[in-house]
Structures are given as structure tokens and as C-alpha cells.
Image 1: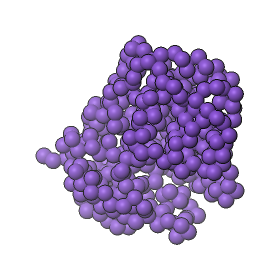
Image 2 (image 1 turned 60 degrees about the vertical axis):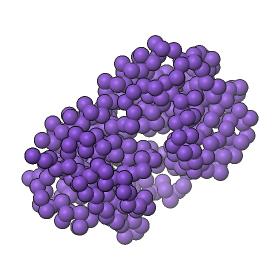
Image 3 (image 1 turned 90 degrees about the vertical axis):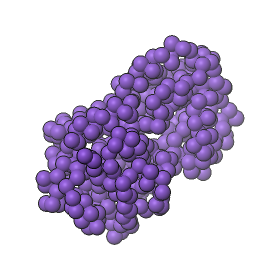
Image 4 (image 1 turned 30 degrees about the vertical axis):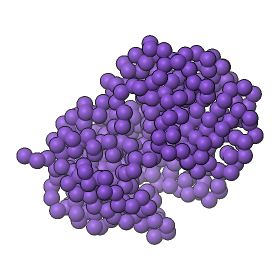
Length: 373
């Protein structure tokens, strides 16, 4: 007998061009290959309808997100209230198939009495209130700071209420721990992220530059890039490439001041993967410890040496696959040591041991199917 599953997404999960949709898209693909008939529900607010999703889904339905002032609420976080959609709820109520909700963003249905007896799983991407606190700290705009602070307060209350209303599948062990300790979640498990790569493909030898990559329009990523320029590579005669989407004028000016720095603006997916593969060191510290850093996993599967900090690694159990630094002095020292040190077969074997047992799409899909049915 066919097994049907509703999946509710906060965004259209294709093309797979930013971190928030990697887990969703490759989960859909793997579940479809396992024979699950997927009824996909997406909020569309700029990415458009995507015919590629029809290859993996029995149906794909799109809903408009209510953005701007009309989407605000005094009691619900904006990321939730702007996705509260009657048409979606009515469509979900037409049958009794289980529902996989992708992110706190799409949990309005948990407060609808029609779904009290339904099997509902919540895929938790972040401890959202902590993520918004990190955005508050890194933002330079007073208006954005006010918004992030207000949303953080609403999210804390909302996440606390939501934590006991669904079976939660956390993206990181650290987030699961926070939900247990802070919100008394008693039905929460950890399932690693679904990825486009399942085999370690690192190259031997040495590269001739260090790489920091990410969406440079995100305040945290810009802050990290500026920190690397001003505190780590300020007096190192080592090449640094910073690559990503939409860098600000401030970051462009800061990178132009340093002769050994090259800024790659809006690289294609193929160009970005080429940079990750060719770099001698992928440098990926983080200024917040929520969620899972997909760019770090990409670098570990496809790049040579990786340098990060504790915040980037927290909850991943992958510390053995990465070089760790705590401050600019550590980063300077480790960069200098690794820059001429070849990546070797023993390094690759360690990566395989640590990564391929955990980040296995087929195995993790079987585990998810077991929890659902």
C-alpha cells in the first residue's frame, strides 16, 4: 500500500542555492526514492514555482506568504504569523496522512483542533530565539536591531509553547539539548541533515589560498569576513579569498585594502565548489552556535584543511575532522602552520570515518520513515 506524506515548507525548496533548503530538498528526493508519495506545500514569496519538484512529489501546492505589515502579529512571531494560511490548513485537513512540518515557521497548524489526532513531526532547523539574538548582536541597523529583539522575545515564548505539541526531529544534537533543558521537550530526537554529497572527495596536496565563503549579505557572515580581514589576515602574507552573494560596500572596501585578498562576488554553484575544492584551508568560524553549518559540512566533504571555532562545531561531533581555534592568535598560528602542509590520505580516511556513517541520506531516511509510520 502506498504511503503518503504531507511536507510543509517555509519556502520553495528549489533551486538548492541557500542553506535553509538543502535539508528539505535532499530529504524530499531521498524519501521519494524510498517510495513515499509526497504532497508538498510551499510558501512562495519570490523564488517562483519550480517544475523540478514535480519529479519527486505526487503534488506540489503553493501559497502566498503575507509579508510586510499585514504579516505582523502582537502575539505570534513574524516568521509564523506571515505563514498562517487558511487554504493550507483546509488542504491538510482533507485526509489523515502524516505531516512533516519544516521549521517553526510553519507550525500554525499545531493550534488548529482539526489536527489534534494527526501524526505531526516538526523538523527543527534552529533554536530560533537564539538565532534571532545572534542577528540582533551582529546587525548594525537600529531598525533591524529593534525587529530582531522583538522577534526574539516572541520566539522564545512561542518555542516554549510549541516544544510539547509535536514529535520534534532536531537538526543538531545541541538544539535538541536546548529544547529538552529549556523547554521541557520530551519527544525530541536528533537526525543529521540531508546533503547532496555522501562521499568524501577531498584532493591530496596543497592549494595556494585560504577561503571563507557564505552568503555575504547575512550580517553574521559579513562580521566574520571583516574579523578575518582585520584580526587574522591583517599582517599575514597569505592569500585569502572571500566568496559569496551580495557583499556590502563596506566589505568590498575592506577587502580591496589588502593586496593578498580577492573578493569573489556572486559566484555560481560550480565556481563556489571549485573554490572549496582548490583551497588549501577552508576557514569557517561562526559567531553563533545554533543549527548546523552546511558550508562547514560542504568543506569537510570536498575541501582540504578546515579551520573553525567551537561555535561552528557545537553539536556536530566532528571536532576530530577540523582544526579548532578560539581567537585571532589561534587562527593566525594555525593558518601559518597549515598553509604549506599537504592534505594526505590519512586525513581523508579520518574524514570518511567521521562523516560517512553519520551523513548517510538513505540510512537517515529509513530512520525518519520508522518514526513516521
